Length: 228
Image 1: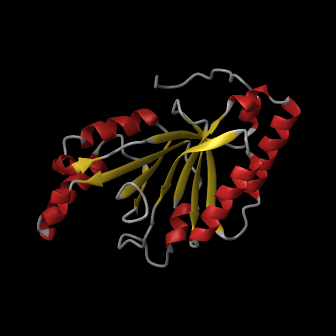
Image 2: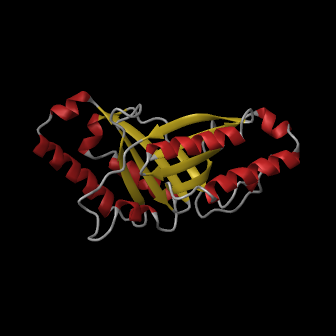
Image 3: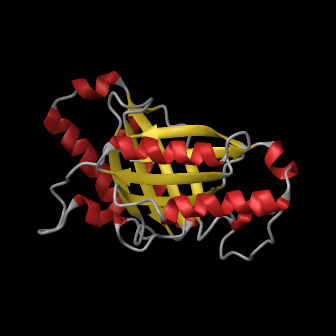
């Protein structure tokens, strides 16, 4: 997995509108024509102040992730720059349904919002007896699964040991940021929280159908069910 966010420079907004439109189209073409080497390439409009858009990528070949990143960099050369990047491993789980491959879990219809939640654990965590760690994590999982607003939230636990600045990057999809925040708040009460450190940056994005929003300086406001 790779999650990478970009920030547009002032040069983008001061450039010719026709050029902006062409470059936005080229970004869309990169996603549409990504080829078989990438299992998934999803773009999101970032809700962080320091990024404008985010890509969530998945591939069995790490080189494909780098190639896609270089493709984006070449399109936006001088107009934007990466802000954050997270590289991690999404591995087989005993919870996969029989006959299902890992890639199948990524091929469903995407949900409206995406959250990349990196974290690490204190060294003392790994010195706790394994069976005790299992019991602690079981409580955490139970809280998440039984929360009344957890239905529909998808989670993907990925691992960054030796690959990035964090030990885990947990990725989420949801149609409600309010529900996601409520579940996260309740999980603060789990005992496992005691060993969690280094949880920044958290990236939050809204699914994009295309990159036409990059052609505008302002966006029309749309009503929402919740105030976020």
